Amino acid sequence: MLVGAAARLEFEFTLQVELAEHDPLMESLLQRLDDTGCSDALVGAGATCFVELQFITSATTAEEALQGASVAVERAFQGARVTRIVPAPDTPSAIDSERPGKTSP
Image 1 (cartoon, rainbow, N blue to C red):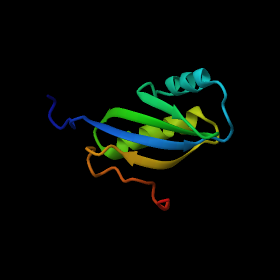
Image 2 (spheres, rainbow, N blue to C red):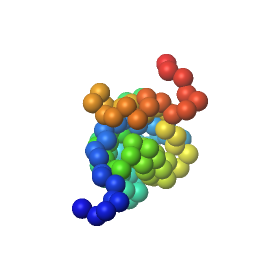
Image 3 (tube, one colour):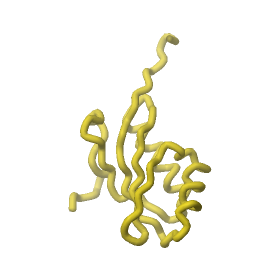
Image 4 (tube, rainbow, N blue to C red):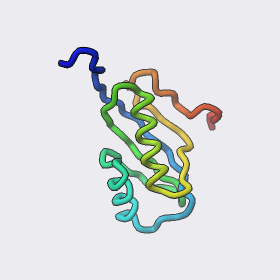
């Protein structure tokens, strides 16, 4: 192990994302995620313009894991926005359940 190298941890969380428009082609959605580095996302679609993306990702901090996933998702889908972050029950408590400024439903 390198001196000063931070240990990488696994973080599991779900991003709830509101898309700017309905994307009827799930295959296209999956390809755009893969193109922006989100190949570790499990996708669930329900209501029109809303998707849930479940991640199990490696990072040195929870903030790094969330930031990387959020940025990649927002790059993959023009105008999309992450509306909620849901941590897995056994994920380190550093992952807040929502972004700052959001309120619980």
